[in-house]
Length: 411
Ligand SMILES: Nc1ncnc2c1ncn2[C@@H]1O[C@H](COP(=O)(O)OP(=O)(O)OP(=O)(O)O)[C@@H](O)[C@H]1O
Ligand SMILES: [Mg+2]
Image 1 (cartoon, rainbow, N blue to C red):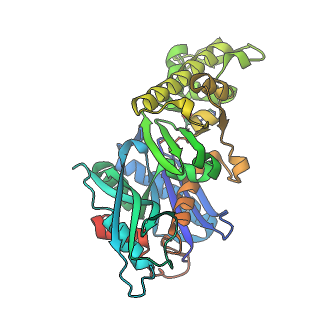
Image 2 (spheres, protein in one colour; image 1 turned 120 degrees about the vertical axis):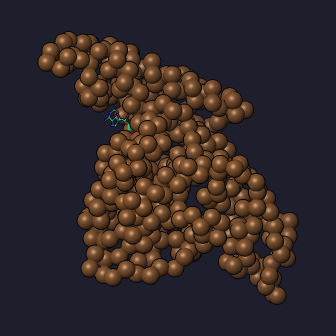
Image 3 (cartoon, rainbow, N blue to C red; image 1 turned 90 degrees about the horizontal axis):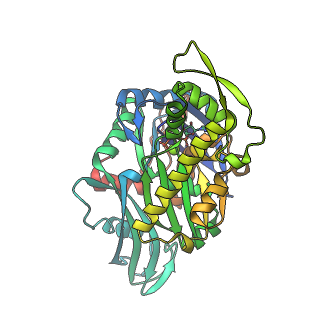
């Protein structure tokens, strides 16, 4: 099944597996999707492989039964905290006698782009061509079929921490899934939630997950910053739990019930009853007591991001807008005002409904599928899936996989 791609988002709070197909109009058709709680990941780092593998397996099984398909391989995400992006420009001579550029030339060129020194603890996981240059003419997006003598590429070489990469690959393996490749989380999420105009101008994408917040900046369609801060929605819950002396589970319930990040938006500051740390007793607290805590933490997250931008030489006033994504923030009314206050630029919140995606927790998995499909450009990068009653279909190696196989024998 050549055009089916499976994306697995391994998050701090949940694993989401999505089996999808991108149609000719670039729309994602979801064939199957499954989500399972995950306790094996802390702050974006896999700390318990068996537990993570169990969550992957369960999420994949749900997606399989919805799609009526059996999954043998899939792509997974890797958070920005585990990757570094190195820009590299390299060139080759076109091999064909008539100088027509073929897919083989492009593969050869992209292979040569990996000739860049990466730190010892990192391995290359992706090569993202930004533009091709043929005999000095730049900004070429798809060189196949064009004619030239020398072809160069301006590429982002993505290097992941070896231990993090291996932990993901092994957890997938334990779940019976072969890893087709890894996609940087911001690129996956960005593929779905950002408009082409936003990527073209310059945009700050903030994805507040459970344990980490992915921070990325796109400018002129390029990823110019890809990092994470180790704070997310679970820290808000923790603050509520400690601040109000209530159990963590009760704090999570309260946080979701009010869905507010700004005290000035409270309409009715009523009292309500919650379980005390001593779970047999109940006590009264006010809505404002909860929202004050949420507001302080969300404000702190945005301030930390502003500091991160500054330390990377990025001035937020030079960015056209902010896009807020991730379960840790998209459910909190008032986050737009808070972000606006800190960054001083227009802010919008991602809505899964307007994206045509069932639930917000599916966004990153959907993004993995879309990123792979969009970047396949005629190469077979599909995942290994078969009808439940069918025998395994032998699949072709796609460009990405051929490259990664040649590079590292990794996946
Ligand atoms: N309805 C809701 N109201 C408030 N917060 C919510 C709601 N639903 C989810 N959250 C919060 O969203 C966070 C999880 O978000 P998300 O699913 O994006 O994270 P993740 O992908 O599992 O984690 P990460 O990206 O950090 O690895 C949790 O902190 C959770 O409490
Ligand atoms: Mg996430």
